[in-house]
Image (cartoon, rainbow, N blue to C red; front, side):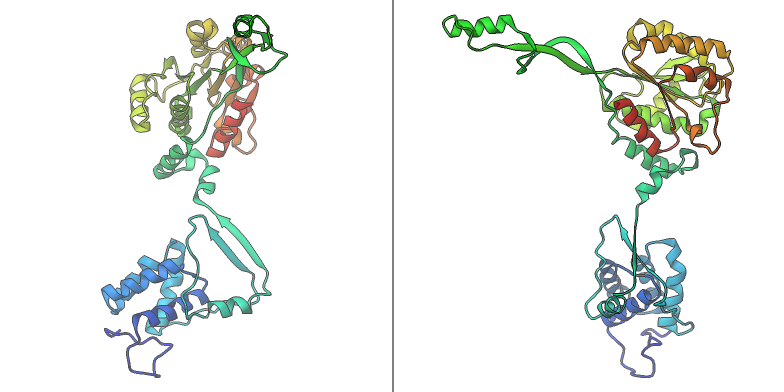
Length: 389
């Protein structure tokens, strides 16, 4: 390829080098005929890049690769069109009019208008009678339903960022405090009514009423950090951290062979620092599981004495237990008596053909109000709805 390439489409018609803008427009047409449609912003960036790097073969190729190709799967198409247009060693496949056209709307709202002077409008008019199938694609939507055990480190970081947007609002509970109300059927506030009457020369023309206020229920989260939960424990702890820093009245515990309170360690807004502090606090991370003994410690030390009374208790565990099932059943029954709601989150529930056959899970289920999945962002969003109901 010479310093000033002569495209195969124009070779033999003129020996004068074409301007970079005209070459970019023609190359854009060739890409569209091969089903690779660069947005207008990308085409403008390509023209600007040609003005900076020149029209040598390598410079043009990498300028196009950097500005016109946004997906790895489009590289092969780009290479084929580049070879056909700039070198003339291949043929560009023309889109068949007998197949359905798929219009993809990306969520990044990039402008997909075509440069002036192109034949894009003519092509759209020619294909006006072709049925269009509109498909909307989003990275976030794919990540929402992806199993945490299959996520990369970058995807887990993105999932953690999305978890921060979850709002865990539990159902309100009646407070002992009185608050003002305009409902005339509520309790009469005698003190305020008399005070108003004194201002009106003893006539009770304005009556005041009060009613019991409401306050959010306490949320208690117990996360299993044993070896069987290793694929999910860090992702679920990030969810627990988002709950602790996102609302008041939240208590967090880790369950393994023992019980470890993590509320203080997770109160920092830096998720990495919070998980690092939690990892140092839990001595039995990725060890065994004794759910019955850990639940007994929770009930005796924290739960039955007041922390779980009237609260929403969420247990995040796969139900694998090395202890006695009878012990877990007894402690779950004690917890169920004092809690407003007991929710069990099991990531394995999403597996095809899953059945709660593990001894610990089977022993706990009779005392669980809601049994939900916990393997993905979508399932945690469902958990947030369960907590709010």
